[in-house]
Amino acid sequence: MSGYSIQLTKLKDVLRLDPPFVFRDERGENIETFNQTDLHEAGIPVVFIRDSLSISRKNVLRGLHGDSKTWKLISCLSGTLFLAVVDMREESEQYLKWEGFILSDQNREQILVPPGFANGHIVLSESAHFFYKMSHQHNRADQFTIAWDDPHIGIDWPVESPILSERDAGRDSTSERISPLIAKMPIEKFVEAEN
Image (cartoon, rainbow, N blue to C red; front, top):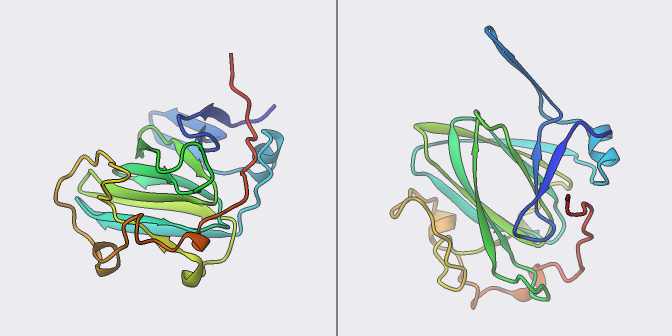
């Protein structure tokens, strides 16, 4: 039996995972954040080959970014952040639908984001460590960037005036985006709804 606790989200193919092992006592915590065998036994045959860590201060917003190849397993190692995930697959019945998640060093939740989805996050604590595993090597040419405040998506961000990079401030709206960058292949749904 898998050590992961897996829950469906409102977005088909996006999953919420609790880490395989968390032990807490008066000394602190011991956490197994990832286990490839447990992930495969849970019916998710994704192989991750890269890890990245992004450290940001309060009110920094990064995103929305995505590509047509990469699976991401996202968590927050320190602090608290709001993560937004958007389905950017034009053939999908949930195209441009989004869902928000609070990730923190307290809840230890992880979000599995498939290819063809965009994600962005904003830091709610004084600082936060945004950690993500990826299934493909980074290639900037394969990526797309969508406006964090795109009215066609309408994400309800918890901060009105975020701190943005030059890249994220000068991003495309969905109407200006080049559609071949978006995945055209359906993403298999690995986990059935629990009763």
